[in-house]
Image (cartoon, rainbow, N blue to C red; front, side, top):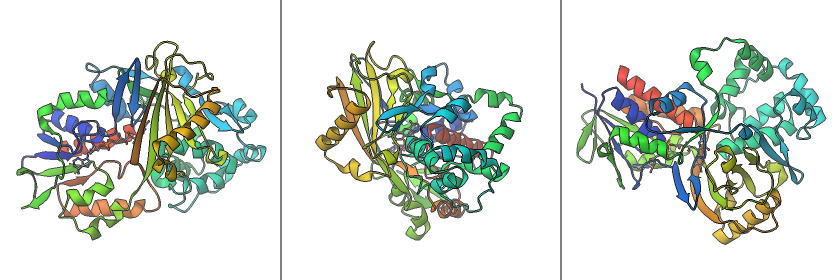
Length: 446
Ligand SMILES: Cc1cc2nc3c(=O)[nH]c(=O)nc-3n(C[C@H](O)[C@H](O)[C@H](O)COP(=O)(O)OP(=O)(O)OC[C@H]3O[C@@H](n4cnc5c(N)ncnc54)[C@H](O)[C@@H]3O)c2cc1C
């Protein structure tokens, strides 16, 4: 049977899947609810600022991400984060401290207690965990200690998931870290042994660098859409439903052998009325962190030194903001000369109530934290944009095993239906691209 594939959602997952399917010669049609492509990945320019809404940068953390940028190199210009962006700041006791980048700085840093610094020496000898549902917080406390959780892992988790380490389960939220302990019995022993494994040509290309695209990340979905052919992308598909007839799928009177969904968990029941609520319940209960993202621009920056990636604020510091990125340092050209561009995050799983505040109250708390952290006497930015996300980032908790089983059951009961997107396989851009390429390869081969 000739394949004819529908993809629901024109975010980075849907577009990348379509791009590789088309490359393999398989016909594909994308249905998108909103009036634009890119999903949460949107970029804007104003008065010399290039600011992002949604993701601010990706990481070259897998070969699929590296290859996608390579496949599109004639149409877009990737930007790699400046060396200064290697420096990450953590807020502690009223000022920023750099996260240690080497052994000596790790010994000297005030971020971690002396007790935990000594405990690290014993990490290779601690037994490995046996609970596959152990939270990130429990695992880090067990292997290293509370100060490491509070001042390294908690802010790191805010940066990726806007999440709570007491909720997220390591096996699903940080699978590489979980596997390191399972395979080697210890993070340190694992990291040392892995460092000795000779690097393949692909490994050498996975530089783990931060990247964006010149002119804004949204140029990535734009170029993908151009390659797929805009005529294959139907926008404004509100109230879309997929029906199942004679082992095929029907959307707007068109028949498809396969449907790939890339939508959020809470959109699935409306989209697929033939799926029973019993079949979906372990998927639709997936939690998402709400986030407010604020772009702040200054034409002439007179505040603190911003020669770093940005700063993250540990929960134990009792501030209102989760963290902020120094976008014009990471990617020069995002602000006018002498100016500065920041992206600031509020809320997340730890402080969801803040995302429900009125805009004026929200700006009051931003003003208080931002002026203190950036050593300003007042808050008079030249540009400010506030964007609310009620369900920004999927939270992989202890319900993940049941969710993945439910997805597998549905996919085997309804042949041709693929439930993708960030309901599984990771929330970062590189995770989304890897999933898309894997699905496209599987369908091209079968
Ligand atoms: C505020 C924020 C900041 C982030 N920061 C980063 C970062 O710095 N680095 C990083 O790597 N990742 C980051 N992420 C995560 C990353 O951006 C996302 O995981 C990724 O862009 C999601 O892509 P997607 O295509 O899977 O989903 P989406 O972008 O959500 O696309 C899904 C598409 O499906 C459409 N859709 C939904 N329902 C229907 C329906 N019923 N019918 C038709 N279409 C429908 C939507 O309109 C949307 O266009 C961030 C996410 C957010 C929200």
